[in-house]
Image (cartoon, rainbow, N blue to C red; front, side):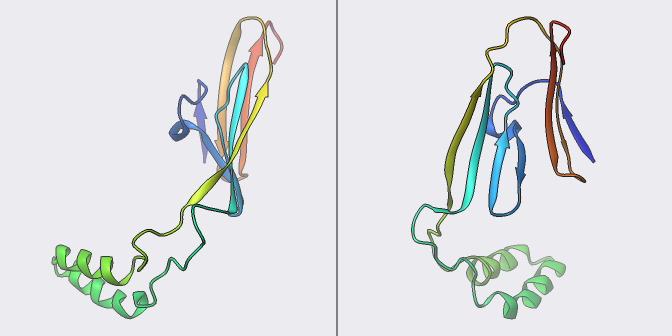
Amino acid sequence: MKLFYTNPAASWNEALPIGNGFLGAMIFGGINEERIKCNEDSLWSKQRAEKYNPDALKNLAKIRELLFSGRISEAEELARNSIFSPDPNPAHYEPLGDLIINFNHEGEIKNYRRSLCIETAVATVSYEIDGVE
């Protein structure tokens, strides 16, 4: 599966995600200035705490039973209290920083293409300026 775009990303939600589970980045695909927002597994908003609830497994069957019987609000309440983190303010990843690459291109931009291939985990940005790709 390959995702294609014909413009640089205007926001983080449009950028292409890459990473290996420990180190990640969002590629915006800029033309004159490329921004790559980086993230790393060891950077947290506070001391990393256990985010898993030890009661999760023993309540999973009951939550499924409630869902299948149409008792959605009861299932949500049990999930909230037994599956989600017992810490009301768990730690969150913090950004590592932005890598900015200035290209200072001059000329008319044509055939812009930004893509992410899910099978190969490769993100690409290509375009043409004055006949050069």
